[in-house]
Image 1 (cartoon, rainbow, N blue to C red):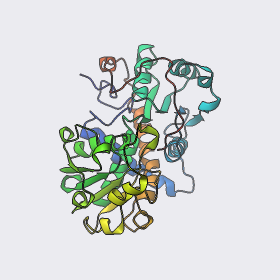
Image 2: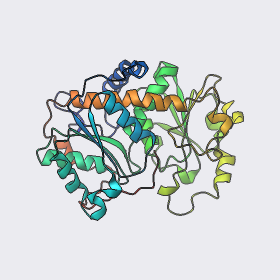
Image 3: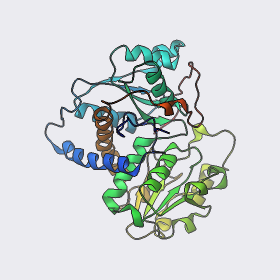
Length: 350
């Protein structure tokens, strides 16, 4: 089956999920990002690679880092950027998601960067664009429900490669609320695709999804055991807005068992790095001492996010010239909602 994210030449035409993308594509994105890093150090921080292209940022959920870095990335590529105010748009008056897309596409959009509370919404948009013969418009997923956050996963991989050089001899631990985390899913798919031999998931049973072992992940319920001799620690926040029912006694109890402290960090390798996709909740999943330690790469991740998103935007546009209908778009991703009246919520972070 063809991957709906790739054109007939195997080049990116959409970025919807890391799952299913070949290692060569991920490596090409990371290599391309490396060439964009230095642009941030120039006096004039622009290149004309997307001059004349219109990028519409459609964020149906709240965001700071992702939305801002996408806007910066687009502008550094010289694209015209339109940030849709969802609360003031026609979706607040009952207009469906796909009708909104059709109206914006009629304004000669070249790309939609989409964040949505519904898993599968970017996939649905990409399928609709193909079905309505608007395949010249491209979609980048900026986070959909609990399903995927591919650009965060890729900037995490860029950060890991920067510090560790080689993926094939690493132990990586992902800690916290993996059940509700789209970042964790994208990171796991990226890490395994890039050849990381050991990926660990650490958390209470109530916050770990089933099937992790089938994804090649070792599961730990004890923080101390799970952190022993790891090279990379990726901390995740508690996604209270996605939880239904009481999955934890309290945030304080969670920190007591699974919060990253200097004492727990000492169990990892001496040169282990600490990562977090943000927003951080200090004193819940991570202590200030760990978050601000010399081993923390949290702000590096934010900086790297601009270059990685520049690479993605550029490659999707550059690889799209041979675009066309793809049968794989007939398939449905996990939890895809097909209602034309799908609405977003405004209570989720990055």
